[in-house]
Image 1 (cartoon, rainbow, N blue to C red):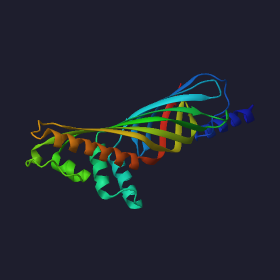
Image 2: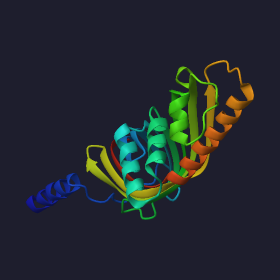
Image 3: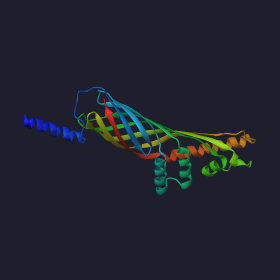
Image 4: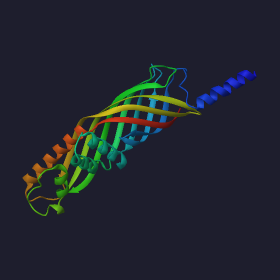
Length: 239
């Protein structure tokens, strides 16, 4: 009796230290998490695992802190992925971004926390308004030759469509609490930018051309820059 009790207490202690998930009766499971996907986002995540071969579906919503943007830029400039002007353009546009990701997952071994997943990510960037002179400087384009450019503002918005992959490990910490860490990557499949003047231009065609060229520069910059390793950390509660 005493040995059995000691064994039970020892197993509980080990479980609290984060032992692999044991085999259980197959059933639907749901997990709510607070998570960060460095350097993409900080937010929340909802995951559901089915009883069929432990296939799952998750969705997360968050925002991208400015510190993450600066970390991306510093690393990219250091390795020569793009120059400082492109980094400044990215930092200026990424402020206020919202990140949504949804993944399909598979936990191949019932008695272990190993998982693999892949899916889609959508990043909505910007919504910022910028003076024409600053936009011309960031994109390297020549502003429409109308003088007084500092009094003319443009609204910037970019939507990125990402392909995500990840492999990681989940732990059950006891009392329903869970932890998860993963390593993966995110690659931009497409970027769609919109640059709109917030004024009525006298030289409509020149401003329209400038806006289209600025959109093209934004698209190329983000499609080249958004090829990122992603490190994920989560703490949650399982039902």
